[in-house]
Image (cartoon, rainbow, N blue to C red; front, side, top):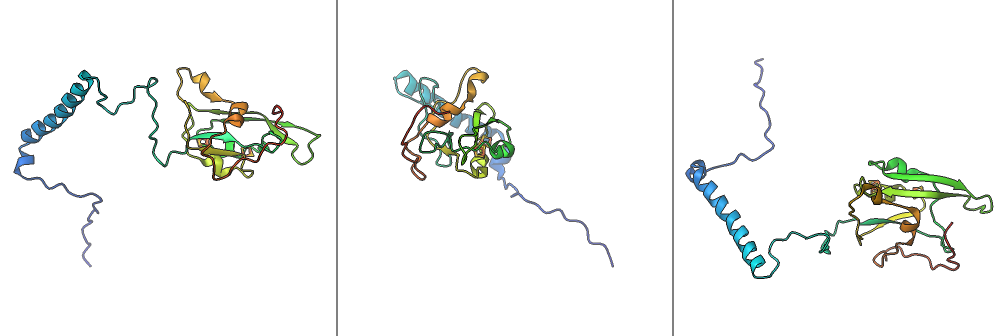
Length: 190
Ligand code: SF4
Ligand code: SF4
């Protein structure tokens, strides 16, 4: 039996070019015309005091039009007395692909139903990729993400660590799917 020649499968569409594209120089001129037109239009808007390009001039301007798929920033949920729902099991830190969650667990012998709690819970937003795996992994619904994205960027990497108290106190109004329990005795968190 004769061996069939190996034919590689093609996973892309072969471009079909007419003589216009093959001549190359016309398409280069067309591309320069499109780019130059956008540049001049934006420049004219800028000269006449209007906003031209879609660039956001951070930090003077802040975006509000994040994509619907934006997961946003983390928050730690609270028990009715204001203490963290988190039981410091470390599952979120274990699953995190960026290894940007650090937790120091502590023990409270007086709280029989919830003896383990996070004395320190920090997320490094300079490394977080906002994948949401920490939220998926949590067995206690203790960490969520809400699409309201506060001012995350910073000029100093050390300032991009967000700690337990900040994660506990951020209570975005758009987290309505799973509302917070009403705090009965919201004393200072442990
Ligand atoms: S969103 Fe992803 S990268 Fe960010 S802390 Fe959670 S698991 Fe880690
Ligand atoms: S947030 Fe959830 S997964 Fe992470 S340590 Fe706390 S209880 Fe465990």
